[in-house]
Image (cartoon, rainbow, N blue to C red; front, side, top):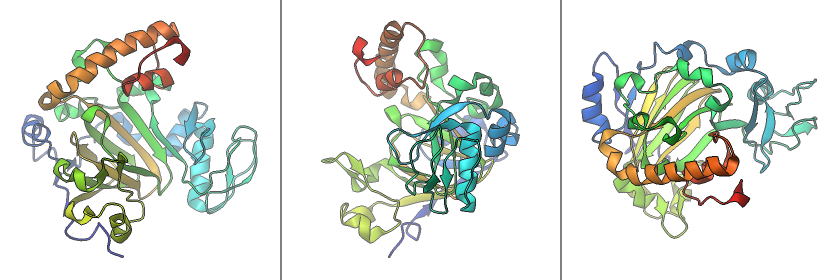
Length: 329
C-alpha cells in the first residue's frame, strides 16, 4: 500500500542556532507560522543531560502517575514502575517482583496480576502522555528555558501567574507510542524537545486541514496504519494534502505552528518535553480564550477551596471551555 512518507511528502527544514538568531527565527518562522527543526537550541539546558526514563526512575521513582495503557482507569503506578514496564515492553520480557507494575509479554499483554496496576495493557504501548510534571516536581522548571533561548517567546508569561494556562508537559514511553493527528489547544504555537530517543512527525499546512479533518464527525484521519488507501476510504481527498515530515532526534526541537494538524510516533523509548506558547503574531486570536480561562480558573479555585493543580480534572475542564459548578469539583 502507498505510504504518506513517500513523495510528495516534504521534509521539514532543519536549522542550527549558529545559522539563525532568535529574533530572525521569530520573524521568519513564528510570525509566519512556518515549522522547522532546531537541532541544538536545547544543548545547554540541564534537562538535555539528565532527563531519561532511567533518570526519572532513579531520581524521582516514587512519584505516582497515571499512564495510558488502553484502559479507562489508566495504569496507576510510580515512575519507577512505569520505567520498568516500558523496559519490559521494549525487551518483550516479563517483569515481576514487588514493583506493583504490570507484568507483560512481548505484545504488551499483562500475564500476571499485581497489587497496584489492575488492568492489562491489551497490546497498547505504555505511554505517560501530557504529564503535568510541574505539579509533582516543580523544581524541574529550572531544567529548561521556557522561552527556548528567545526562539519561542511566550507572551503568556506576561500574565499573572495564576492566569497562565498549564501548557507545559512531558511525554514518557516505549517505542511505538503515538499521538494521533490533532491541532493544539486554543490554536497556540508549540515547541517539543526530544530528550531521549527519537520521534517521527507528520504535519499538514492549515490550508490542507480540510483534506484530513471531517467536519461532520469532528475527527482527523487516522495515520496509525500508514496506509493511504485505507485512509482514503474515510477521507477521499487525503492525497490532496501534502505531508510535511521530520524525524526529531535526541536533543533536537521541533517548532509546531498554530493551526497545523500534526501526528507523532516514537521510534524508540524516550522522553520529550513540550510547551505551548502565545506568540506575538497570535496574541489577538488567543486573547478571548485566555480571558475566559482566567475567569474559569478563578471559579475553579473557589470551588476547590485551593489553588488548582494543572492535573486537576476541573482545571482541564476549564481549559477546554467547560463551565464550573460545585458538583463538578
